[in-house]
Image (cartoon, rainbow, N blue to C red; front, side):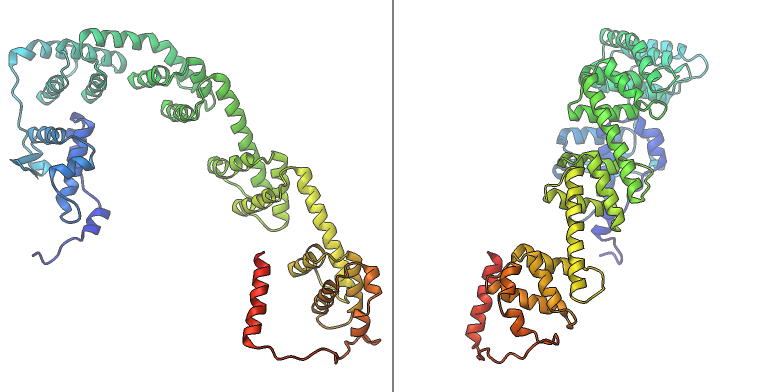
Length: 485
């Protein structure tokens, strides 16, 4: 056993080093699956516990067929980056890249002599290296591309990029077309003709983006995807491009159209309507932030996480502005704080400015009444939330009239803990089913409890009783039951 080892968690959460030579010299020659196999295998070289390190689990992790994994390792073996120690069971040993010695494939000189000659004539300013030639051969052999078709692809790439085009670019184009079955002279010719027809249309898209560069292969491939695969017409594409003119690229346009595609927006009218709605949401976000005293460089997250959801609840922009001002005045100055207020208004069914203002006016009128009650009780203090809770209980839950509550407040004026006394007397009125001022004045509850000098009389007529533990538990059970009901 080794003295020191890495834990499996360390290895999983750590990093796997990849040489820059691999990225610059080897990666351009490989397919996506071949790169995946090499990198995942590199990771598995370090992980010794917690994962099955065999061909079956390896293929399952990468969602690949076992045979395809073996072919990928064979590819890297031919480049000298791995050694296949055993085929059954498959055992692969990684070799340091600086020590790698490619296992060159042997191709018949006669098979590629004419290809070599014609390809070299396309690059009069430089000599094509054996490595570059070998990369072309590998691609032709593995992707079953006609030699003449490969020459047509190279010529097409030169027409786009010029004679200084790098061979990885040509390889990428050829591999991309091969994946779509474009491997013959006929299919390559048809594809090139299709691309040429699209030149003016793609130029119009680039112009809508504010770009003056001529369209390249990638631009045309994207345009084909948008029109053929996704079903957009040029009008819808150009309309979208103009929405961020001088602020984006074909890649950004691709992301936006991908979003529209997933949202089911295809026609110019659908996209126009969505843009208007989106621009409206951004304007609302700016005003809400201003009202709350906030500033954000980007509004994308705010629109997505707050504005769009508030509008979905049924609030209009005027209502959102009203609530944002209300929040600022009550020291709620965050979007999340406003979000909580929004949901409280929604719970009350207050979705318009008129309904919200009416509710707030009622609250203001209620506070005026509470302030008068506090004054009648002999205090000059400000209103607290406890006062509001008491008033709600007395007036809305117990059913006492405001005149009755004021009557009791005046009766306890000058006493300490005046609101405590009010709770006691109003509870007694409730027990006696007295809810109006007239009935309260005809009762002797306050008269029997308050002396002429404003002090509470001693109560001598109440019945004293020692309750048992069982009786008390029964009482509290009844109270709990009532609160649940």
